[in-house]
Figure 1 (cartoon, rainbow, N blue to C red):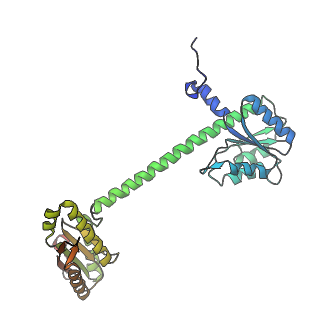
Figure 2 (cartoon, rainbow, N blue to C red):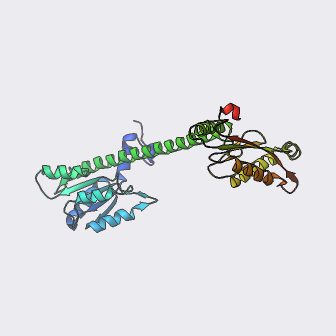
Length: 323
């Protein structure tokens, strides 16, 4: 006959391991009659349960529940409660527990004093989430099977909740990845500014707005002078640093609703909607002054060539022609 090692859970057959895990459950007994509570606890201990706590009233039960919470999780696996606890019924405790994620999955066995079947009470309690009803006096034949069933329900609830949490995390990660992908489709990786694709889409909307509402928009071009000299002399890392600095300068200069774009290695564009020709020309002059003598690491003084395209009803043709 093959020997079965019993010293470690990992060596146990699946069915024995499952029973062992259930017997390791933490149980709270709540009863107003100490003798009956002690008898119920003895029945559990005879059945192999060791992690048992008890309380004589509702406040004691709630205190044990609160003390069970660590890191937003409760280690309680089952409540066995007399249905005649002072001040609050079993179904009311169930309703309180259902308001907290830490307690929502914990099953409740309600112990009733009636010795006859009460169909109305059964429907009421079970309708509020009580797992099962048992009647005094408890016996070794009736209590342990009901407890094992309730604990099996708790284990399945835990597994379902864990899987649901994992699926929610996976969905959240997918949404983050989707958002990053969507951002990368329309933005420059280095500077975080919009890319040419985003500019073309924005221009299409701008042209429609200009034609329909007779508004005026402006497209600014910024071409960094002597960027290639710095890039060749100091390397690509220094060039990238300069481009990021220029992008940040544009962010500070323009409004949040203006569309800032990197359209080439050292070329930028800015689309400003709802402006006028005079304001656009003034912005272009100020922009040229901003980049005159632009200082980079105290060694390079750069400048930029500024272009301006005013878009109004007279020249609102196509995106390709504007660009």
